[in-house]
Length: 414
Ligand code: NIG
Ligand code: FE
Image (cartoon, rainbow, N blue to C red; front, side):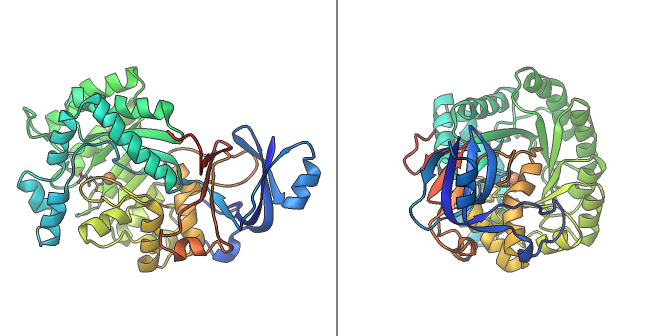
């Protein structure tokens, strides 16, 4: 058992609702605080002097500088397992071509599929490990990674096995999702319905058997999969006990209605969702995930995050890190940016990257600094918690604790 502190400020996120708007005044902000950790869990939190008196035998992990401690960040939507670059796509986009036009011209997702299929297992593992290390340095202690750049039995399995292998040795927790339904691959002999049947009948059983993932995602869009065929596919995946997530309403509406009808865990993107779509998701208790990295990467509007909160929804913010639409990938920066456009309060932004983001991964054991939760936290060398968003990503976490162990700085990172 040990006590970490004293922390100039400690943001517990205790007592905040999983849904709806949050006032900053509702934040529990402890001054000169300590957190008591036993193995990987939090045992107690409170004023430093009080916890020291109460837990006399605990070791002390003393902090000498000013420090603001908050829960470790959770990035609940990424595509960080891929090879190759899409700098050529980006250059064409800022010169005026649209994402869809580039895809139709043979670029886009298909370009990354070809590079990822070609990469050796070692290369892909290395690339993914390097990206995970970067995520950890930016304060992420739980990370979701999707497949979706394989789009064949062999390559989708290769990617999911890569994610499983790096997860086994990674410092942070990794959750994988099967996104084989990302696009109809150019070399598939058959139509979209036949491709989805192939995923359902051939790929998902192997994923189950090898325990590679328990989550299934689909990209619902004109260029990807139609709402009707997607709905059928998602219901089949649900009957196989997969949790469902949906890439919905990125360029056109339709996906969120399917997500609601299939009781998906989350609907992600929502850039073009109107109040109607948002209300439909909230009524079905579907988490709404905004992906500001895709809005910035493509120069599109942001998901209506303010509206999601005001309508009573559970808003999550994730990076969507991928080589095409969202190359930036730094969650804290992206969250600080969407906050300025959508007028999100500090409390709402932190909730969207911590305990609410955990819910999008079906986890209820992390994202708050309270007894019984995982001892995952990050520390910033500053006196005022508001500095974190104010610096728009430029104030990096100095310390990261994962499962109660200080892994940054000087940790043995994987
Ligand atoms: O979430 N929208 C679909 N999928 C990814 C982009 C993938 C890519 O362009 O490589 C996204 O934005
Ligand atoms: Fe995505």
